[in-house]
Image (tube, rainbow, N blue to C red; front, top):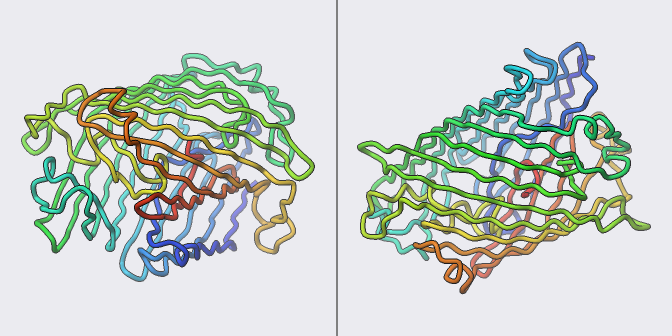
Amino acid sequence: MKRVTLSLSLCLACGLASPWVQAEPSEFEIYQTETVEAELDTVVIPIVGAMSSTGLIGGAVASVTGLGQPHAQLVGFGAYSVNDSYISFLGYYNYALTERWAMDLSALQAEFTDSTLYLDPSANPQTAAPATTGIDAAYLQRDLALTLRYRLYEDTAAASRVKLEQGLPVGSESINRVLFEIEPFYQTRDLRTVESDNIEGRTYGVSTTLEFDSRDFWPTPSIGQHSYATVLRDWGGSDRAAYTRWEAQHSRYLDLGSSGWSRQQTLALTGYLSDIPTWDNTDPSSQPDWFAQSVLGGSERLRGYGNDRFSNRSALFYAAEYRVIPNWQPQQQIPLLNRYDFPWWQAALFAELGKTEDRLSLSALHRDMEWSAGFGLRFFIERMVARADFGFSDEESLFHFTVNQAF
């Protein structure tokens, strides 16, 4: 079946309600079904938004499934605003190299002409602003990654038993899998501000990840666990530090059952720890640029703060999120929306705690932790999860629009 749809317009006017709004593209995850169509499946979703940091912004998400291989998927996203901010993203996912090896490619370039950033002057001497004071800047981001993924183990029998009804599995059964990933990466950040000289950051190297997953259905898991451990290495150069960083995260999902008004209720819990063992507090040349450090803030951790609000040698983070899919799902009766594979939307409430420190000390990381809380919506549309979160803290409040569950 060849299908092209071009008629959805999403209005993201929540920027009127919050001081800061950030649109943050993330790595796209596509739910793969066992059914394989012989022809390309193409979807285009136009997006129109109004954001306080960009003004009016418009763009589109496009997805082509079956390009090159039946399960391979090409995903593109582009948006442009009235203040000349833009986002461009292109990814190619799930290309099978062998029975167990698969490959992903992704490239992102984005510029936000009206951003507020917090930089530690000890690590970034080009700015005189203290870390507690934001600086206004134009922010240019470039990310490139090649991910090679090896499937060590997968419970294919359990995966084959998954049957979906209105976008949710019939019954809950953990699907165990173990993955190993190798990812060469390249990342740069350029800041232009009238308050200091331009600030440039760069890192490139290789990361390795071991992942354990027993979730029943990753777009909205109700049972199971998800854990990963990553070691990242940049060998450094004349313009950047050589460093090693590791991080680990464990998430658990508790099924709270359905009710007379909901199809699914879940309590999701997570904990995260990151450290840079090569860090030397007396030698700034051993410290990577702010965005490559252990960071908190943004669409995944401490959503009441902007991207990379807190950066240092180590970071600790906890979160709890209540997720509910109500019985009321009117989208299939709404003109234009009913042309899409859009089986459910979900509401969420979340609370978070986090801290960064210049040393790895669990006692120090647990003292005077920062907090954020908020609420959000998720939309499972064309096998992708779009997420909109409003987070607030004692410092600011933000609206995040991105993809995938936070954890």
